[in-house]
Image 1 (cartoon, rainbow, N blue to C red):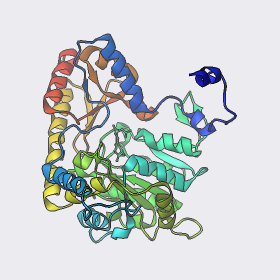
Image 2: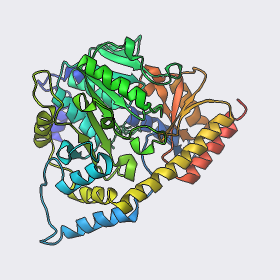
Image 3: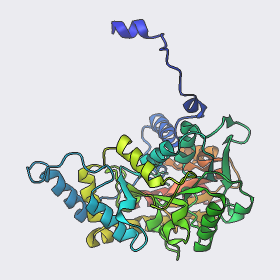
Image 4: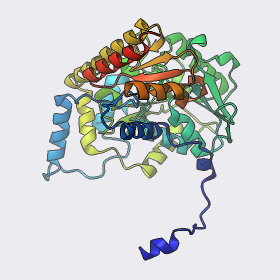
Length: 417
Ligand code: PGU
């Protein structure tokens, strides 16, 4: 206590990381949680429903939890115990992922198992280092821009545009069918591309993905392709960018069991780095990613990996699809509610997010209004970049009865629009 009081007003001699100082506010989702909590405090009797953060709600299928329980129990035995594993993941899981999602396209040793895509995005940034130029879809998952700022790839925040200097924001709005105008996009070293997109739910066609790959090849760029929602794809579109000719020379793909199997809390994902992908000096990217993984990561939890292995086996694949179909049915309810009320509605078919236009109204105002009047948490579109202004994202991750009730509350308030 004495030490604390004495030191309370004293700064250390450590300079603050100037890149972190560039960030404008806290990370989007904790900011939203803060507002939700304030609303709950002011309205203690309200039953607040969250269709905000994309966090899974339904139980994990038993074939998968049984495998994790077995692995956890095994740790209590000499035969079942294991300590540190390979930093790149268990060989059987790497082979299983390859068989399930990249058969005939990639090799198991190009797949790095991890504790999730968000963590891999930051580790990729650490590998790429400061000074790389970056393009993002606008709107997009905020971790791309924020991790670019923290890594030192950007200038300052520009209040007027709502953008960071030195990032190329590739506008993706209804006017361009949510696909960037690549002919008028300047070259960058890195292109973050999330498909199906969070937050708009838009899914690029095979032709558009080829256009993206050709653009990256022409410019000598690397695409960080985020396939976190690929399992939701209904259209005839490849589930991996590596099905597109040329992608192995310009793409890295990250994916996750979070939305596939309800592993948001279990934590397991993977990143695919092709052996033939090279930096400008001819050195293989995979060697540097391996160096980062062995230095900054000690392998995913052995219990989680046992669950992952069950996921990619026949019973697990069916279990994952039943979860996905449950959330897809939620999507239908949410979509239909807004369509019936005459709103502009996008997404919700190839992705678990419905993107709703509110006639150009500021999205934070709409977010606050929905929270106030419906006790319902959504996510303001502008939280994903200035290109998201005028929209809110409604997540389909929720219990059916909560989604139904949320739709009824929305209908009551906005039905007479
Ligand atoms: N990539 C995309 C495109 C995502 O939307 C998310 C989660 C992740 C990666 C994270 O994957 P993990 O494997 O679980 O690390 N997006 C959610 C959750 C918010 C967040 O900040 O991660 C969302 O609501 O957008």
